[in-house]
Every structure is written in C-alpha cells, then in structure tokens.
Amino acid sequence: MRKITYITMFVVIVSAAVVLNLKKKDFMLLPEKIEQLMNSTPMKCYKNSFYGYTVHYPSFFEQTPDSLIIDVGSCQFRFWNMVQIEQTVFVTYCPGGISVENIMDSLATVCHATEQRWENDSIFLSGPLYIDDSKISGHQYHAKYVRRGKLLFVQMLTYPDDCKKSVSRLVKQIDDWKVW
Image (cartoon, rainbow, N blue to C red; front, side, top):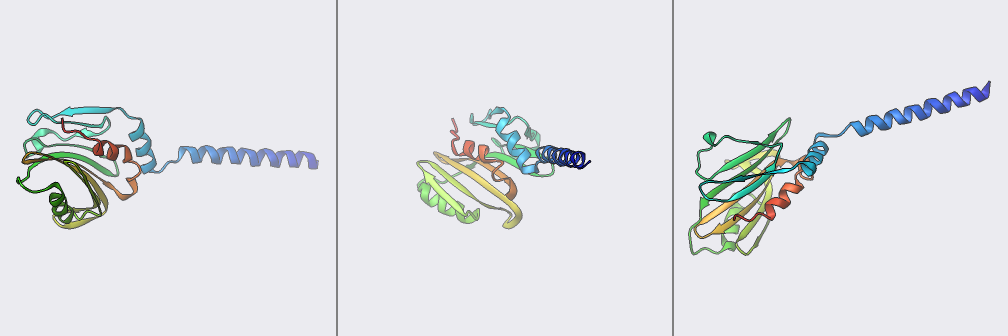
C-alpha cells in the first residue's frame, strides 16, 4: 500500500513540476517578447526621396504617413502595443564654423543627455526623454546626429526604460547608421 502512495506522490510531484515549467516558458514579460521579436524580425528599408538618406526599421513597426509629418525629409516608424517605441529621422540646419564637439555640448544640454560622445562627423546622445523641457517619466532616448555641411541628419529612438535591452539591436543599428 505504501509503495502505491509513494509512486502516486512521485507522479503528482513530477506532473506539477512539468506543468509549472511549461507555464513559466509560456509566460514572458512584454519587454522580453519585444526583444525576441526585435532580434528575429527582418528589417525594412526606407529611402527618403528629398534628401536621399536610407534608414532601416523593424518590419513590425508602422510608418507614420507622410501626410502627418510637417517637416520635409522627416520620417517616423513606431510600435504601439501597451508600450510605445518610436524611431524618428529628421534633418535640421546646423550653422557652419562650429565644431562637432561644440555642437555636441549644446545638444547634450538641450536634450538632457546623460551619455554623450562624438566620432568624426557624428554625435551620439542618450538619456531620459524630455519633451518641451518636461521629463517623460519612465522613457529614454538614443540619438545619432550626423553633420553634412550645414545640415544635421538625426536618427532618434525613444522607448520605455524597461525596454532598453529589448531595443539594443536598434540602438546598434542607429550607431552604425550611414546617411548615404
């Protein structure tokens, strides 16, 4: 009789462990799901018809229609499903005669950058996200500014704090971005 009880108890414990393990594998937090999707999805390529730059974005991002974007040469791609992740590209005027390092210092102050660096004609900034000088709680940005003559080509990614690891593929892609 005891033999059957021990066998039954063993079967129940093993079954429970298997069920719990299966449920654990099925349960993923949203940032983990986004990371998995981000790392496995193919990238689409957008080419701006006015300036001629190209940018790659995840195929599951939606492109904001050009009719909703006021600035010539700008584009935006976003993922919006309980969290918002946006990849934006725009072009802005940059006065001549100013060094890239001075531009970086100025931009870092305006953008509240906590990390900054520059290489050749490119500036890299990241930090907490501010809009109109108001901090957007729980969000960050990462941006690359590329100087070409009197223009700055900017690619920026904004995302929730808990998705930093999830968007690392996009951050690397932005860091490696060549305008042309």
